[in-house]
Image (cartoon, rainbow, N blue to C red; front, side, top):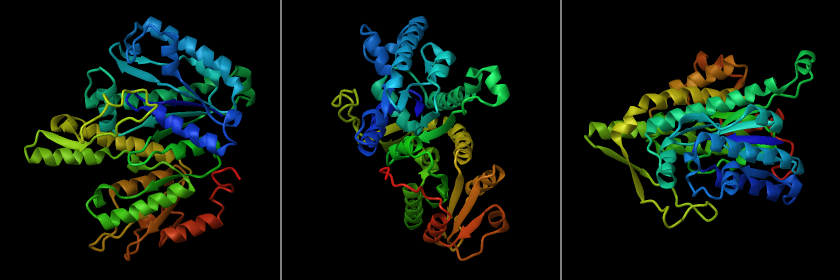
Length: 402
């Protein structure tokens, strides 16, 4: 398996991907050729250019930067055949002092011939904190939002351009290599999604599920939230899941709106944890305060971008899944916790030929707009899991390969 993982600067992908490699080493026969070998392109470029100070490589003239990248990629392509599973940690684009520029060459992508292209994403306030902590680049939250969209689009284009590397004869007679798959994957907020990436690489036969559930409607209802979280955990245990709750910037925008109504100029958000050993950062210097401040005005400036990207990104997650499983709780007033977002997700999945399953908890019967899009409606998570088991939806091997 050959994988390319992209994502904007500020994601801090290296420790996350090393976590995936550690899972592979533990579960795939102790590592070696059966494990996952990772090429961290940034680290390799610094080794290729020892005269460049840490954190300054993107300040180089574009000609030298491109030359360094091509030299490193040649090394990767020469070395990769020694390993069964290889992953390139890189970027698709840079939005830096040179403006916007690409970070790839199609001829080298064709030579690598990836099976998977994955763009990682994270909550924008987390990206911002890491940018302030680790880099000296003036930026706004808007810049980071735009960069994220550019990274997703450029990576998808790279995956789709695979056909350009095939010979005309192979395309004509249908013998071209299978097209690589493209996924968008959040690195996770409260917990790491390294297990998800591990399964995409080493358990590709597992069903991929989009867990759908109300979010902003239940944010102030702890009992309902606990139900929803239990559902999310059950899905994550049995399937490869693309959880929309891993990027929940709508809460950030709502927090800024409330602060603005009270005349507040800043909102406080939890600071990211201090980087641990092996992160490549000075742990003492990188420590952050217990809370981190964001300007209310700057958050409000991206409120429209947040809504637009949620709409587009969640539909991407639906389309890259095999099926959608939606959990509809009963609210304290007895009404169904069915948001307009959940309804649109169900309809989108139905229109794209995905299997649609609904777990309906309210006493009130679901409307035809739910029943007519769903393959089946269940009264509980347990009933849904029982049905999925009977249908053979669960992987036939455990996570340790037995």
